Amino acid sequence: METARQVFRRNLQENVEVCDGSPELHVLAVDDSLVDRKVIERLLKISSCKVTSVESGTRALQYLGLDGEKGKGSVGFDGLKVNLIMTDYSMPGMTGYELLKKIKQESSVLKEIPVVIMSSENILTRIDRCLEEGAEEYLVKPVKLSDVKRLKDFIMRGEGKDSGETRIRKRRRRDDHSSLPQSVTLSSSPALACDPSSTLMPSSAPSACSSKRAKLCI
Amino acid sequence: MERNHLPRHLVLQRQSLFDQGLLDEQFIQLEELQDDANPNFVEEVVTSYYQNTSTLIVIIEQALGTSPLDFNKLDGYMYQLKGSSSSFGAKKVKADCTLFREYCKAGNVEGCMRTFQQLKKEYASLKRKLEAYFQLARQARVTGTASRPK
Image (cartoon, rainbow over all chains, first blue to last red; front, side, top):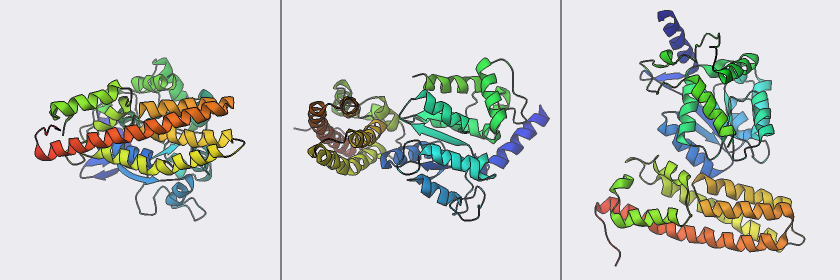
């Protein structure tokens, strides 16, 4: 148990900035709607996350240093590492899907950042396409506090560090609720979620998965 | 100020907005995000909404004045309006947006025109009602007492 806890803490610190001993995620929010940006900013701040919000995919890429300049890794131009990207799907110019693809395909460093798609449209083919392209989640708008909290749990446990195949395998396994994934982050184990440095409520992976599925099935 | 500390007449006023079908659960979600440091969050969102969408309403009105109607474009505008409306829980306005989009898909000019007039009314009416509510809520917070309108 001790070894596992050490591994957990190491992954956590790799993934997030640590301020005053409590981990803080830095989220880049992308949405062309001012109202939606205001709401997502507030949801994230209430969840103790740092937020940078931009109004387009182009701006997001500029911020991430992917707009032609040599990639600065996942550090925004203000020097803050980005731990999660939440983007609206339907935006003029570059859609959230196109942004997702650019992030996953054009930078070996940036593709490690989990990307979540938000959309007011609950279209299965669209959801599938986004998940296949590497999105961590597809949130149906309007986004609620419980969505953000669940997302934060998800990311803090290092699930976002998984890539491609492992993630898809894990997703299917969580659907079974049968076996735990073999990954080092041990994210499905509820016992390890009770990290004393974290103020998060422990929640098990199966319920996170089923609430995601419940969301998709609305 | 917590909702349960609102003076009674404000509680009733707020409840009637829900009872009339003007607001839905999302409005409550946003209210829960308010605290002593950010007591006006919902009002700020609503103000942003009206500032931000007023141009959109004008654009839609202009587009409805052209002939023939560009249903695709209209649908696109209405999708934006619907999204923003939904984000703060404007239930009736959102429903009007949905109806308008149905008429767009069906290529129904008369339906679009009629629904847009309805939408404009609801949009303006909601603004008045929310402004009145927020103002009273702010006063109640400042004075800490209920000031009954005469």
